[in-house]
Image (cartoon, rainbow, N blue to C red; front, side, top):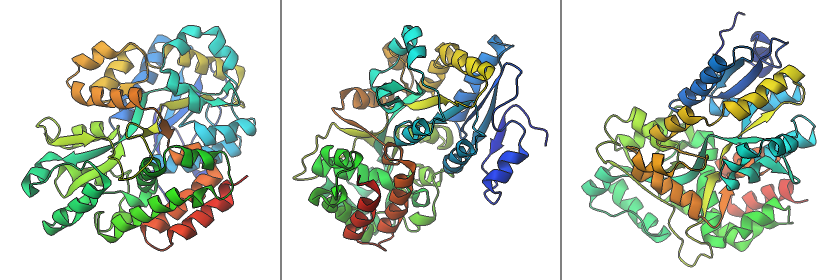
Length: 436
């Protein structure tokens, strides 16, 4: 079929991945023409910033056009892996780095960019140093860090708290004490798009850290035998099930998707009191929530400590950045266009301003004055402080682990939240796929 330069994929869930790719002319490496193909996530306000960067580059480089295609989050994770495995990857591969990037590297699917960064030192020096960890495999850089730093944040509806007459939680015990108070008023304590699974995962990421410290998940990453059976891990798994049993999450959370932003709507309409979500949620609530944000209705904080826990309350989890890799199967022309886009199209001044206007902190250094001058200054400073002061910034588990282990993880997280497996069963199932 004829395809416009910017195409939306991922809405027709019933279309097999291979058929969807075969049906679209811009999928896979383009043939000549001095351009490059680029897939990334849709959904506003982030999509508009990404599209704007592509448009600006194309206008300034008429002989090196970037042809972009957008996908929904959950659909993209499947489609990009299938395309790469079939040798039909786009030139520029948008991702989260970490374990998934490692699998691409080990399969020879992405370019080694180490020497390119050596030849372009100003590019590397202009970005948060912490952003390169998830772009690096065995000491070599395979991705261009881009976009924004995205710690996971505990949001709350100030108006709901005032109506119920309670204060934001300062500890895990406070969270558990708030649950019956909100339920008694017919308000869900926490919104959760549980069908997407990775949203549930954020709870475990923080509980593991707050209870056992970063060492617990580090042992998992390093493939230690029975690492998931660490007593602190079992405690964390048990506590999240206690929250589920106490009706801490909105009724029917397992059928709510994050892609639909229905979880966000529950918070800004006052049907839920709190929500654990990424820093990007601020922009969504600002765009979709009417005057909820501008009127001061949105509160935010980092995840509170757990009584007796070993973790540092300054630690955070989430995405240190987003990442762009280059397909090793692309032509020399396509690779050149992609690298020129990295040098002259990524995090340019206009893109940086748009991220800040949307309530995000770009990973480009030297933006402090822009952040302070923004109408979102308070939230941006809060996000910047979390990211810059965290002693440990843990990468999202489904990106830190290999794709195979991540899928087992997400499947078992869904079962854990549905109370269909015990913490001990969860640990056994995960030990089987992460131990070396």
